[in-house]
Amino acid sequence: MGHTYERIDGRLRAFIEAQPLFFTATAPLSGDGTVNLSPKGITGSFVVLDERTVAYLDFAGSNAETVAHLRENGRITLMWCAFQGPPNIVRVHGRGEPVFRDDPRFGELLGHFPGVDPEPHGLRAIIVVTADTVRDSCGFAVPHMSYEGDRDLHAKRFAREDDASLDAYFARKEHIATSLDGLPGLPLPLPPTPRR
Image (tube, rainbow, N blue to C red; front, side, top):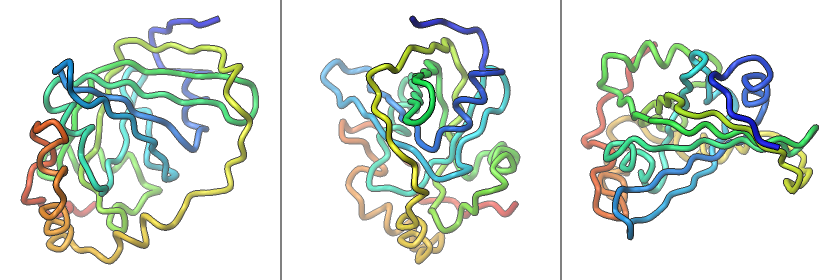
């Protein structure tokens, strides 16, 4: 049923790049810490950088659990499901790193996402994941669902913010600079958005 692959290419790459939704899973090292599972979307916000490396844009939200867990231990799993077409599930188990706005690599990485204007979404970081294991499985129990399009609510909400007001928004949120379990989250103050 399931297979393990050495790289993200060919059929696997085409499959994950075609999915409008994927999920991220992370956890702290502490056995009683909070496991985090997040859906990710927004067309154009995910890219395959090479056969073992992927990246996605980390936008403004009400917490920063993924960032905190990656800063602590780097473990992450990404998952895509086929809600249309032949049944399939692909997981990338790997090591992730949040690349923040003030990192010298940020501008070059941002260039891999030409179809997304990061400003309306409050871009916080770019998450870069290096695959350790790539696996697929049947997905026979995943239901058929139709993709109607991206929601515009996130962009509408965060388009009202500039760098200073976005930094103030993050500072007011309880679990942005510090995770639910007390781990360091998003470094504040927020650096300015680099220009492309």
